[in-house]
Amino acid sequence: MATRSTIAIELPDGTVSQVYCHWDGYLDHNGRILLKHYNSPELAAELIYHGDISSLKQVVGEQHDFDERFPDDDPRSTWTNYYGRDRGEEGCGVKSFKDFEDYKANHQYEEYEYIMRKGEWYVAEYGGNYLNLADRLVEEGYDSVMEMVDDSELSCYNTIFNN
Image 1: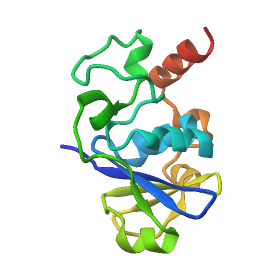
Image 2 (image 1 turned 135 degrees about the vertical axis):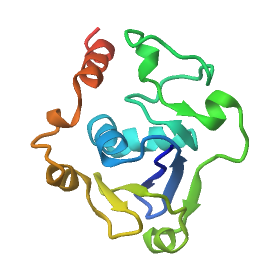
Image 3 (image 1 turned 180 degrees about the horizontal axis):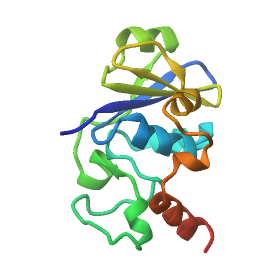
Image 4 (image 1 turned 90 degrees about the vertical axis):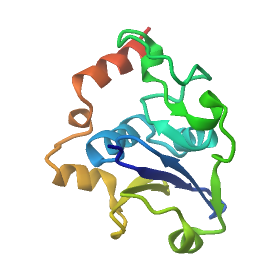
């Protein structure tokens, strides 16, 4: 069963852009990946640019066959899967809002709602208030950003960025 989420960014002009993400929206997966791998407004904007997401991974990656499964030691196994870019679906682009108030009133609601504002990630769980994502992960028992990434994610990260 999917744990759905949304991922949004408040842009410098005050507008908000949002996409849907179907799989693994919970803090321990999407929350950790966003905090570790999409930790700047530029990276968050690049992630959202391609529209709705099937499964969030450590890097945006390139267009690929949506149904292909890559071995864990292949860097492509860390690429995010998009409905439009990778499967060719229509109608799954970025949703835009005139400002944060418009976003809160009219956005797509899911179990977990992530938004980057002023360079920091926030999360609302099940329609609750937006709380700092790093603080929520600490509440969940993680002591540092490095603990927020499991060994398999870290090895993929090292493979991509240290070669």
